[in-house]
Amino acid sequence: MLGGVMTDFFTVMRRWKDFGGRSSRKEYWMFVLWYSLILVLLSVLDNFVFGSAGAIGGTRDIDATTSVTMALNFFNAFYLLTLVPSISVSVRRLHDINRTGWWLLISLTIIGIIPLLYWSIKPGDEGANRFS
Image: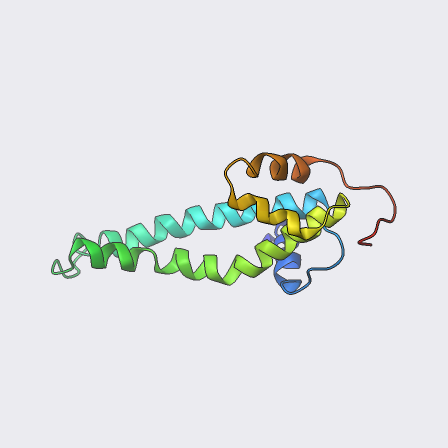
């Protein structure tokens, strides 16, 4: 059941090294939705498992720095696992509106997020384009 709902997420993960071609708005936004939900759940899990270790019978000898480092383990592992697929689906989404993937670099500036958000919402080109 969950696989049907998460089809686009798994499609993006399978196409992790595919920087060519196009990705639809639906594929992109469903990936973003599931990615965000999973990150939130992992943050909660990290906090529950590691953040309250002393409160649930674990050792209280863990200092704050170690606790924060441990608390980010699930979150960081998922983030690293999905970093390349996230970039590749973003590049393919830009291809869908006939923009080169290099435009993704403008996200390194704060103001660059605005056109990227607009382009990710914009409908893709009808028919073939130079990235088809």
